Image (cartoon, rainbow, N blue to C red; front, side, top):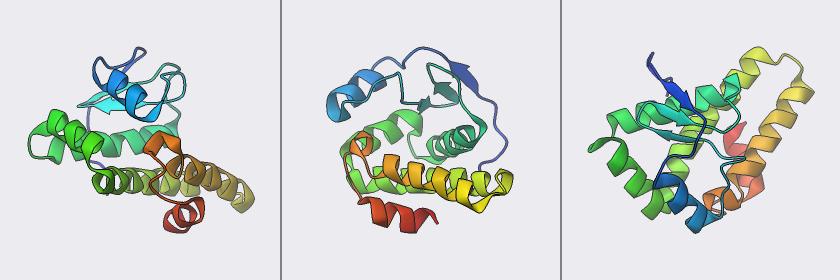
Length: 138
């Protein structure tokens, strides 16, 4: 999925309610986690362009989801399969962005390996193994 052109805002404080729920459920920190709620991207330190491509997918997913971003987040918290599908879709776009701008294949592989590490980690509830995440993203 390539997101449509959308307007968005970056906010440097955690989203109320969503952040607390995520911190309790997965132990995430606002120091190293970005949240998208509607067309607002919550990030403590800004958003690199490859991650912005990822977050724009979440804006589109939430826009297209029946019930909007609130219903999307409720399902995201409760449905592991849904959460994984949403993240895989966004990370694939992020990886394609990296492949478009980073020409060195070794450097591409390092970026994508790091993304697979994150996707397969605690932040997403250890839903997938590292090797499977890497296979999906490449």
